[in-house]
Image (cartoon, rainbow, N blue to C red):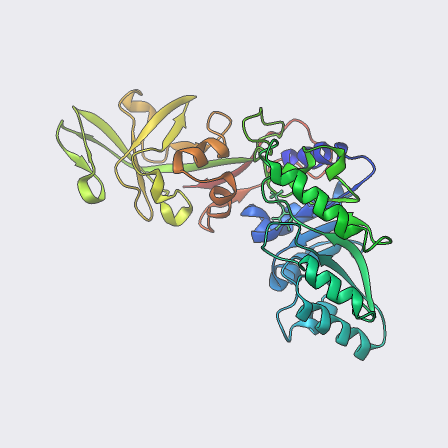
Length: 368
Ligand SMILES: *Cc1c(COP(=O)(O)O)cnc(C)c1O
């Protein structure tokens, strides 16, 4: 957890005048929202984002009373009162969500807080410019709604030279001029590194907190957070020509020693890593062979002394020598998908406290 806290401080320091929230959706990208939330609250983080109401209810209970929890999806119709009951603040994305929140404010007789999302070009969530016009023209569209922030989301922020960044900034700036008194928020992890013009009043990093590289093609400034290990179940020698795994996709070119590892696609060791993955033992990168199974995969350990790899031996799947972004590249996906796919079968071990712990580099997620 020391690494997550250190990453939070590094991100916050990029924009000293802005507030820095933390995005903890999908169980803090698979790492444990309650544990991460508690640690970041101790760092002074006061604002947290999740995607779903249910995630918000769980996280809210783990955080200090002064923390605010925002729910990115907003209320599904009929769930508005649950937000009040659990002290959660919705992000309002549609005219319907705004209408429902305004109606609730009227019925409880007091102003209710919310974030308003506008679409600056990603076409995912938030009011279109036309819907913003309609909302403001009717005059009472936001009556009883205390807008905490106006927010939007960037589509291409990890590619710093992408023209979408400037286009979205321009459109967001224009939309923001319609809400002059409301603080604004645009930047996710990658957006923070696009520079001060993208910072506005509130940063919303997720991935970079968890060690994922925020800028494509650049050195990753974040500390690695996850160390993922899995145990060897069985080791065997196979002859040249023998096959390994489902579909017999791998045929040994000669005598090989193969270790069966207790992690498969049900553990987020994605099936697309078949024939492409690797694992690390003693700093040595070893090739995975054959098709990834649901609960296991196969590692070619021929290059290590037989005594080094035995049932129970732990191999590193994600570590400093094989960071999450490298695993993602092998799997043909992004680090986000690797982390959020890890599943619930690992034993999570958090290393380093909530205080200014600079020494412990990793959280360990261990499967044995
Ligand atoms: C997920 C998400 C974030 C965090 O994005 P990262 O790229 O993980 O930093 C911020 N804002 C919104 C709206 C999101 O959906």
